[in-house]
Length: 171
Image (spheres, helix red, strand yellow):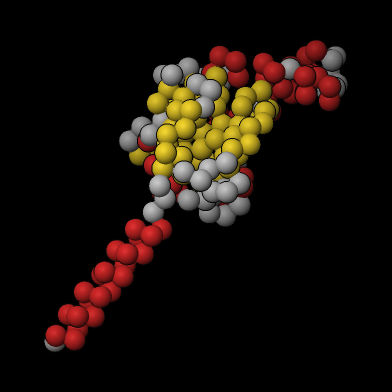
């Protein structure tokens, strides 16, 4: 009996030790319109991500029914910033609702990621399964700022995405 108890105690200590070793240290990071806790070793590459539906509608309307690639690339009113962290394998998007003509997180997900599927709400965040968009086991976490802005964080580590999403504060 003592050997079994000793084995159970050792297993618990080992499990706790591994979970502490796997835990990610988060630190606050300032983005353009919000701040959020991110892994301390994050290295962001910023780019511009196009809002496909609005860009196409605008290009067709302005070009008599045809789509000009110059038009697609040149109108910043139909784009939003995206930050990619290749170290931790996640992306962060900020959507200004008035600029991108998107009224809510659900509207944004339907237009930007039509193949995503709503999974659940958790506190202030909304979780989507992105398996049909980015591959098996990928997720997006959305946080909304009263219809003014939306942050979408996408990646594979759902626990990390949730921690990051819950830490968002809008400026």
